[in-house]
Image (cartoon, rainbow, N blue to C red; front, side, top):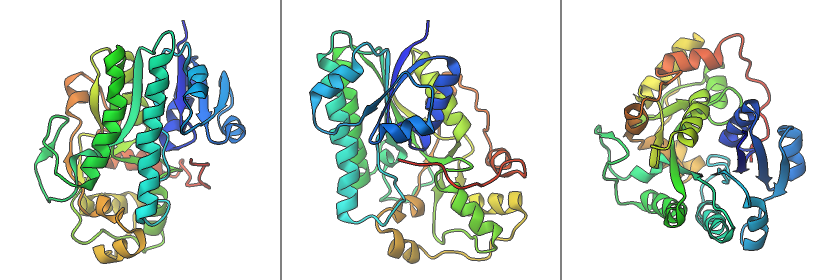
Length: 318
């Protein structure tokens, strides 16, 4: 029997990928978006399209009623603009307050869902200290603003466990997609002979979009998956090795190394994510038996950037 699944933030990179997979599976999907009409054009075939609400419980009660699974990917694009204090506050409002209102509504409906899958980020481990140690789901994080913000985001979602909901927190790394996210501009720069590593950068945990789909399905269907789940591949690499692999796949040299100060000038605090990445590993997924389709970076990039995969105009991302 098909599950009734509510997907909040379905037009973003991860939301699109998992929504398409759920529709392929024959599930009954309700899409919640800031622009339901645009979502319907982008993702036809869902059971219903509802408008995203930030701070009213009553509309959420009607949307969530009868859902077996709720997935929340609502966000603003992380690297869409320079991180000013105002933009960072906007992200926190969407992440924390948005999750809070969904959980509050979930608590008041007749039958809460069996599973709540909520977005998070590998930023939970922090960026204030350089480290070569592996960070699994049990690792002790740094004590910085990134950790504190992700902790509050996860705490808001984890509150649903108090009324019997299994909660999974997707600690997402750099998602590799051939149209959306950060890979297309990196690949285009490398194709145009202006690619290069970030000087002084550390680790770059990453994951192929097909394994994002696979791990979310795995989390939804496997009763043993709960709490934090690192969405990254086992083959975590340094930023320099990432660029070297990308250059090898595209048969282009990496000639233009980028100083970290230049990234900070244009990206603000978001540059810290690229400069001080942690060596995050998917220990829980491996322990529970998930089989990665693309466990190595070279295989992932060949799959996404081969001549049969075109870097076309990006799809809408919200």
